[in-house]
Amino acid sequence: MTEGLTQLGTPTQYRYEDPSPTMLEAFPNPHPGTDFVIRLIATEFTSLCPITGQPDYGSLVIDYIPARLCVESKSLKLYLVSYRNHGSFHESCVNTIADDLNNLLSPKFLRVFGDFNPRGGIAIKPMVERLAPTASRSDALALIASYSQVASLA
Image 1 (cartoon, rainbow, N blue to C red):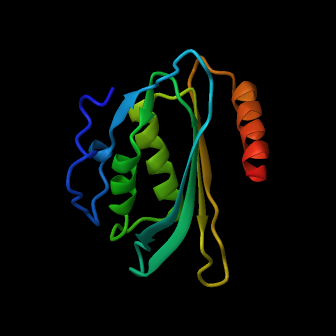
Image 2: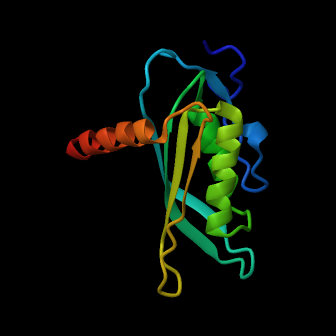
C-alpha cells in the first residue's frame, strides 16, 4: 500500500516557494467500495499577497470522498508549506489546491474552503467544489453534512 510514497519515513526537506502538484502523493483507497469522508484541516496556511508581498494567514479545510486514491498527508503538508513565500490571491490558492488535488485523486467529491484572517478589515473565505462526472452532488453533500454534524460533537 505504501509503494511509491517517497516522503514517509525520510528526512523532511521543506520548500517554501513554488508549490507544485508533483509534490503530492497518493495511496490506494483502503475501502474503495464504501463512500466515506476524509477531512483535512491545515490551521497554519500561509501565502503572500502578490501585490504587496505582505503575509496572509489562514486555515484550509479540505473535504473529499475518495474514489480509487487518498492523498498522503505528509506530501500534502509539504505541498501546502510551499505556499509560504508564494505570491497568490486567496481565491487563486484555493482553486489551485483544489485543481491539484482533483487531478491527483479524481475523487467522487472534493471541497476546499479557505478561512483567511482579516487584513484591512476584510476576511476572505473562498470555497470551491469539484464533483466527479458520475457522482451525485446531493448524495455527496448529504454525506459531508452528516460528517460535519458528527464531527461537531467530537
